[in-house]
Image 1 (tube, one colour):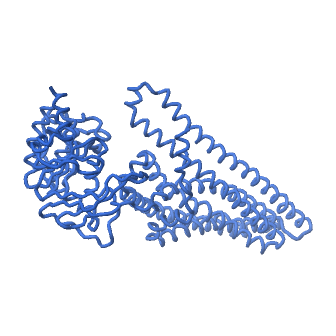
Image 2 (image 1 turned 45 degrees about the vertical axis):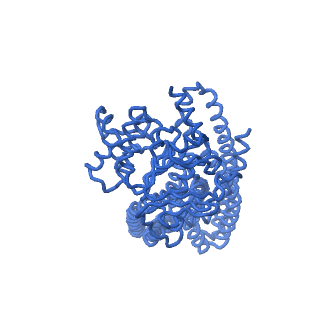
Image 3 (image 1 turned 180 degrees about the horizontal axis):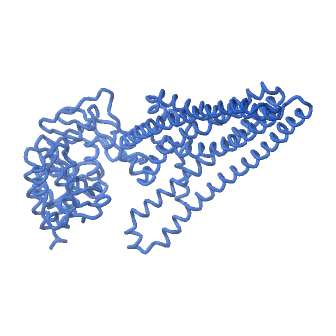
Length: 594
């Protein structure tokens, strides 16, 4: 019940239709002339083939009825053949234009939504399923293709054919033309009514299906937990709730579409009875020719096929718009952490770090992590941060990297406010090794090289050896070309940390941040890598977050952080002598070791 309550509270607001087309037009307008010629090719070709040709078939029927010479009939038939050839030429030209420029538009959109998604802050990704995000991105791009096809092959074709046919019918017989026009207006009004309702139902169906996909992706990602806790029955029950909710939404949407089809069928019966029946009456009175009756019947068939297809087209259009709306919510969402206008690049020469009256709280949390927090880290100093979980140690590193905005205060590096420089230039000057390094599903070599795009093979191998990656890579059949699996799942925790450390060695930035960077290493490996890390630290400003106090005892300075405030500040020896919190932490850890 708690989960369902949260889902209702977090139910996204509906997106206006105009916003969907805004984003599509933003990247499609550069090909507007190509799209126009493409649409004209298809539309003019269809009018020639399906609206103009029946006129000449009417003439053939009338000529045959009048007993005209075969030569005269053949001359009309040759016109029909010419129209068919021209129509097919237009169709093929439009096909080639569509293949080229629709694909270009999809490529541009893919790039656009990728960048706009990645620009969001860490908190955005912490609150969204990865599977759902990927699903939304893919559906948005595919919806662009579907909507373009629908407008060109569905709406433009059907509407263009209907309007042209009605105009011709008015010239044939005003009463018949009026019947078709009145029927068309009523049909469109009814279709609009149904479309509005179906759009709401379809959007609900899509959002619930996306949630289901997210839960499925989460279950697959955590398959090891499901097996460890033997909780398949529990997870199946949990997933079944989302399947049922999605099924209910699909049933409502499909049922309403069936009602729409019933109403549409009644409309066509009325049209056939009134238009064709009245045409037969006029023929019996000598007002219409046999060819006119055949033309009206042909146009009725055209209306039936086009507008019946149009009702299905609207269904597909609604589905595509609903698919696109979810991604539009992300595209329209304001990015939490943005560069200021005309932000410059930071220049780090010394590496002094200064926190001035920093106040910060996480979104949707009442309590502040820091309140007017002050800290100065001199250039070249190695600083350890220790304390209980939740004290704010890792938050200090996140704020330094500007993964979140401050409520108030400033963070300065070499007297430069990090909120006034580009995030890219800031992070280029910081080597950061997180507590839980996540690797790309690429080779070990590519994962290390990721830290420095222009690194030579010699540099990458040197960094690998310093981080003791080279030792375990030698035992692998494919060596550095070994794929590490999704999120590095094929490597152990210690191996992943070594790869992350190799990145830090390779990047060699003036500021080094290690957040429990050796927590997954065994004692022997940790000792080797710590020696290498101390070499890496030389000449750099270093922040080390650690629960293992052995990691920080050789650093220049250690801070004990509790409840967002500095409780103790000094070297390892000094803090031991103070017999405060640090000394208690040290005693507990050494006692466990003994």
